[in-house]
Length: 333
Image (cartoon, rainbow, N blue to C red; front, side, top):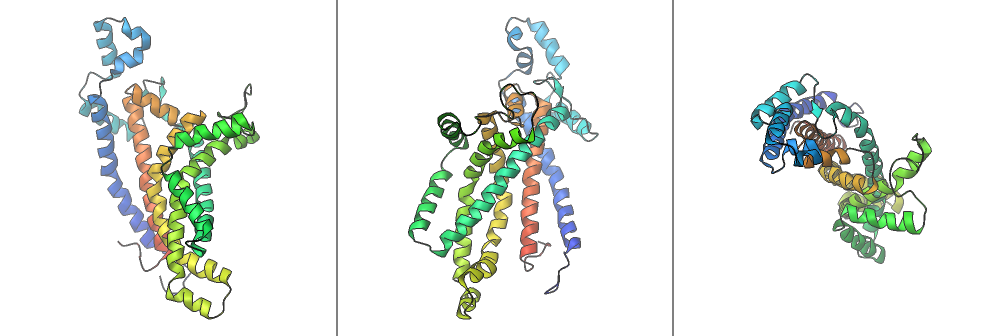
């Protein structure tokens, strides 16, 4: 891409995406194989979990027949291969814990999880960038010390603890926001107004759990950029401080933040699962808990593939954004 050109390098970007896609195939296969291996080695009995309380009094022949029906009596490698070959045709199997097709389980829940994560991520990015820039302007000042102290404290705060604290204060003490769920009590339909009010607390809690990294990264990047020669030269030319900060230091200082996007995806997924559980948000958290506790092989594998794919896409997105922001990096590495 030549200097001053506004054309996007679609070719190099497509080649990078193609290489990452090819590399993702063995990664996803290995991850799903590991899921089946770990689930097979766990002490939980899928037949007992499927039967529930009735399994406590069931005879051994009944449990053996149930294991055969569920396919749990076969070697885990065979079950994994059957699942992989079926998944390639679009059949993700049936969830033994939720008694639904896996595709239906994910389809009913993934949209709400994406909504929660998208709102939280956008909020964390916007607020984190603003606070990072403000603290970078006067590093060592009172505002900088206060914000960084809070950021370091929030790094150690578990998302579920923040969620419980938010419910106690905003829902119970102030009665300002709903404590959980997707709709108001007694309501059968989820209206946009109800969804908007119910997503506030979980999204803010999830955003706060991700906020420290954005604040600290932006603070460090912009602070270093302010000490660079081009920025000093802009100040020497008499440019306004706001222009120097936004048009010179911020652009250079935000480059490290682009790499943070991909690395925060696993933490965002983990935090979302905890936040969804605390706030009874109808995402994939409840399905994940059910699949894990009841050794639901097909659902466990599908959810793991989904989470792994999200991480790989996040890493690819951060690399693409970095390459666009800094043409010196390119897309061939």
